Length: 298
Image (cartoon, rainbow, N blue to C red; front, top):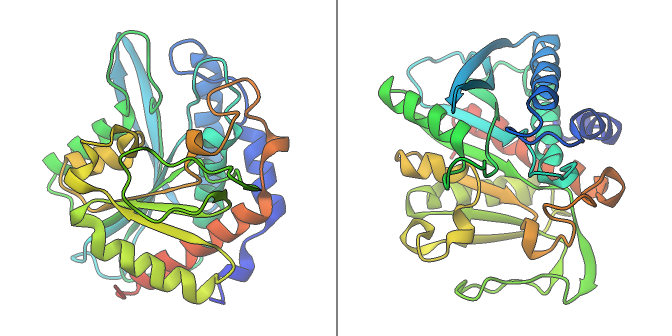
């Protein structure tokens, strides 16, 4: 196990989920969403990270992506990014989707901020990932972020997106597989899915190698989607797709959400349904991979 893995604390993940959980849809619950943004901002700052709030305009309101940056030793190297959306679907307290992702994001940031890596690492909490009533578009916050990064000429070696990483079901037959997915997927929903496109395949193999080495108890199921997922829309239902759109290598790390979790986008997506042992392992994998890539391994 990587030395950083032992620093992941289950009680921290629980506290973060409890702080983020609650109805917080972007349009319907704007004040509640802002309260979560404040919490994430304050938490990043408590780690000593440089924090920026990036305005995201939407239908006369301004939302925000919360960006924390850990400066690397070598500025010319491509950056790394770890991200998760902090809004929730309408009417849902969103514990798995996506307080779980935010919790892992914050725990990873708290550990990695103590290191001095060669590459700069950004930790980003994205707003407005979920559908809003005024538009058929979603991934609004991450699309704004990736578009602005592209305009600025910023280069990323990889963006890792945490999308619903807290739910497992150890019952045979609990895992559903989309019809067009041509991959060997277990029928038991207790693994972490790793979704890549062609540009991200090398990063996916690197993630698997480091995670298997340092967190062997975490089952991984990788899948490289054909044609960047356009023929399987469900593989583009999170913020990694914004990075694919703008040409960046990106992976979605997920418990597969609606293909496993019966509480997805409902009022039942609550803290008590989550598997925190699984979340600890996910956080350990993320920390070990970013630490390795941050020091130049791929």
